[in-house]
Image (cartoon, rainbow, N blue to C red; front, side, top):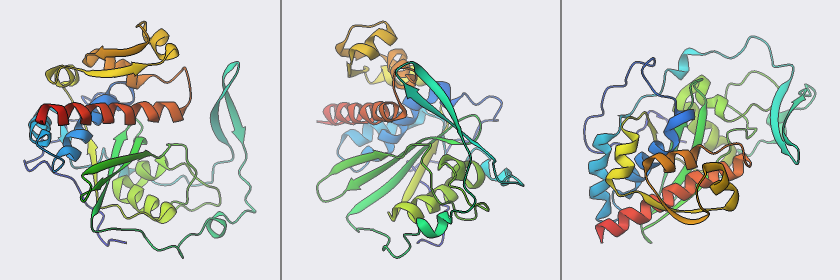
Length: 282
């Protein structure tokens, strides 16, 4: 475990000052695609000539190296009596309330501290974080850069995943996005390392502006739309070339399926952006 979690990814330039929270747009409603572009911009540096172009695009994004004031929150004075979970059914969405069992020792049941923290000098793990208006981590993607093979692999961590959060004072399993709300990126990183035993080298969290112009400045991207996605967007199914507006709408899709598909779309956009970047740098 690294002793200092105040880590950040930099594009080699001074980061722009964070805007007042009142003027910051909602990541939940508008920011996932811009977050994806910023992430690709960061990750493609060192992955070929296209990284230089995306490094330039970072100047169009309000990139921050500090968190959205998450550490001002404190844990609730009492344990939650119920938990609300939204589930998909054949009849639509339904909200289920469950009561935590105080007799279960979750810390003992899910203790994996005997498993070594995995790291590799040839692999750089970067945590990509997008936060919502409430300070929760709405998007959590672990991106691994293999320096030997010059490849990038990504895995999403669902925001509702139950985990052991260091310092959490109660006996139930809180959702992983609460770690960011109460401790920012350092606590989220510590939580992921504690539960998944993967060493995280750096992280990037982004605020943003100028979304449409960023996507359009690279000529848009090609996205394969399913019939359901196409119907939701009012577009044709199959491979479609989408501009900034439609890529945003695509990544914002929430109602037609589950969080698995939502995070899959996020990774898909990252992959398409990376492919476009490499093509432009060829």
